[in-house]
Image 1 (tube, rainbow, N blue to C red):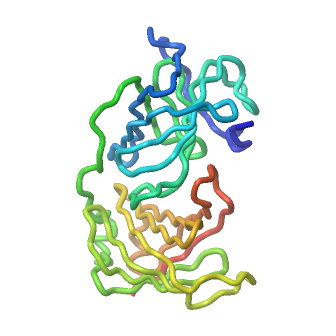
Image 2 (image 1 turned 45 degrees about the vertical axis):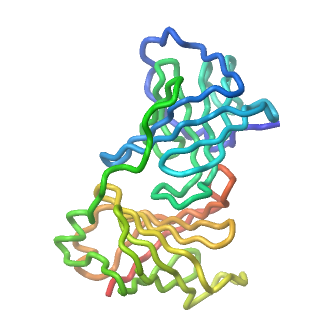
Length: 261
């Protein structure tokens, strides 16, 4: 039976506005919903097509910014583990195609068609029917990174430290919203045998930098908020999360440290 994970207990949502005339939703196989989140001035959108019911929720496929699987369910009564009623839940898995939003995430939609991403507070909205989707507009490096003269360039190497492991990050290709490249383990004090070579994606999200490194089913994401003085000094600090592709929620958390050249 499909259950929303206990981390929903920590979610906070605003008071629902006037209830839509299309509420409560009548979910059906083959139905398409347009879903979008808004983060740091960017809009990320998917069209979500409902498939068969599996374990109490609709298995779904989402396509737009990237491709990923999802589960969608309506809860007329109390959502398990929370006090929320009359809500629509979208549970997105990690993407199966390259993406600037690589993590799995869950959003609870209330009767006005709006809600927030669990644990992140990022606004999200959903409406019945397909709509235009795609990648957000081209994003440049945050102003604080530019002013510190620490923007990455092709061929440059940064060092990432998280979960008692260190990687050298090599930027090989400029993307519309950041860089892609490779990550190679140079130090491992975790006690676990790990593959040496990982894929790298750096994404600019407004005033935030997101570093995603991945291998197999594992994704480690490091979020670096506005920190001009740290950039000048050559060391950035943030929060890292470990995810498993296809599973909702973080598998672990750690601080992350990035050493700049």
